[in-house]
Amino acid sequence: MQEVRISDITMKQSVKSADFTLTFKEKLELSKLLDKLGVSVIEIEGIENNKIDGLRIKSIAANVKNGILAVPVKHTRESVEATWNALKEAASPRLQVAAPVSSVQMEYIFGKKPQKVLESIAETISICKEYTDDVEFIADDATRSDEKFLYEAVSTAIKAGAKIITLCDTAGTMLPTEFAAFLDTLYENVPELKNVDLGISCSNELCMADACAIAAVRYGAVEIKTASYSTATASLPNVAKIITAKSSSFKAYCSVRMTELNRAIRQIEWMCETDRSKSSPFDNGVQDGSDKIMLSCHDEMPAVLKMAEDLGYDLSEEDGVKVWEAFEHIAARKEQVSSKELDAIIASAAMQVPPTYKVDNFVVNTGSNTSAMAHMKLIRDDKVYEGVSLGDGCIDAVFLAIEQIIGKHYELDDFQIQSVTQGREAMGQAVVKLRSDGKIYSGKGISTDIVCASVHAYINALNKIVYEEEEE
Image (cartoon, rainbow, N blue to C red):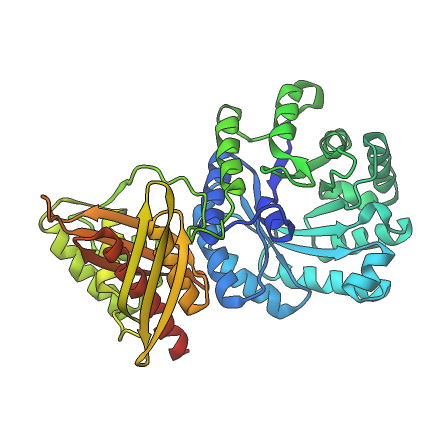
């Protein structure tokens, strides 16, 4: 039986869609869920900013153990090289070369004449082949292109070395029978297409994307672009269910684990539908499970630093030594150290910098029938800056007041509170993890007042970001 590869483009869609967005942490979690679900190909957006996007691709590559990780490139050698450097550690990396093949998109979006488009396709695929054999050519708006030009574009991509050709019904105006006839004609006019894999991508403009995808399977398509969260393309759960239910008719199967499908899709939907509220500094919809013990007193320094890297930290050699020494001190007293404890170790030991911002004072007012309000005063360069904000609780209010003062929102990657001592005057410890340019900065605060501990943890992390930004 032929395997039909299910490809998920949800992360790509989140960049274009106005309906939902995904934070850095949510993208990492989504990649884990899709890989565990058995999705054959996970597609993510390419590189716009080398530093930020390079780190994002590397982090996702570390999560995808079983499937193919596909990333698009721009039509330049520099883009291909930068993308490959970020992607090369993936278990199964793929480079994607996309080009419009309809006259409207070629001239007005791509800014090239037909002959130049063909030359660019051939050249970019050839460059990609220097790094990997798994190169995909994506023919955007293929169903509205001039037939002869489409045949030539597909032939050019195959001759240049593309192993998979993906045809896009970008407008989404075809019925399943029309799409099947379109593929049949293409096979007749481009015989070499039978020597490579055929992929398809259908827009859901007429609510026919799922049906067109299934029709394409009958005509030899072995890869289908879908989305695990409802977007304007074929639905991952629908396509997987149809192929599984009709596998004997299609003489095909997919690798999606059907027993885990519904639960995984519910998690993904919850994540995608959890929007960042303007009345809250908290960003992501990642459902964090119980903290897993990851390290023991028997682990050596490389294992500890590798775990820190997996948590999102980019430690310098000096900070790595400090974290290891602090870990040894903790591990000498207890055999196991959890991820949250490692966060606290890094927050207190790594990248201690001169404080740019200092807390002058703050006041929080709240009640059972009123929103919490925070009045915050911070000192920077001997000047006092004030912020006032409402929030859904004390922590919301004080964090938003800080954001108001600094005039910037940093992704709040994680926030932890735990007791350090016991009794009425117990000390509370807060750890705040902020993400800037894809990199994690953590801060720690301790106080008998959890709000005060949280404020100091946030400011501690903020000062590390500001210090590094000013150094750069």
